[in-house]
Length: 68
Ligand SMILES: [Zn+2]
Image (cartoon, rainbow, N blue to C red; front, side, top):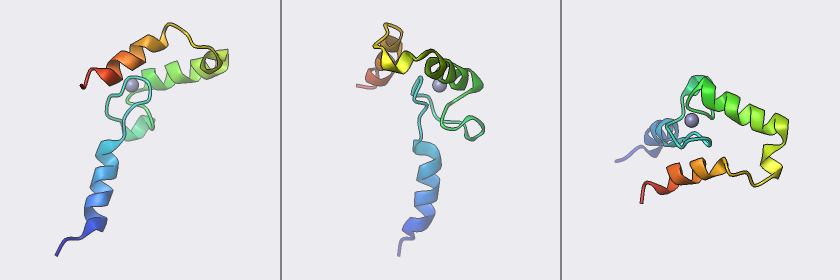
């Protein structure tokens, strides 16, 4: 018999990805992979970057597409 509850907990910890660079999330900086990425995201919010399609976001798209 399998116990899905156990594996679900483990998968949850390893499946999270940094929304900034798609690297594995570090629990200390959830949901980001590092303090740097957390800072970058915070500054985007503060400067209203999310409301404007900036060229900088090209970097993020590349990181996500490179898998395929
Ligand atoms: Zn990151």
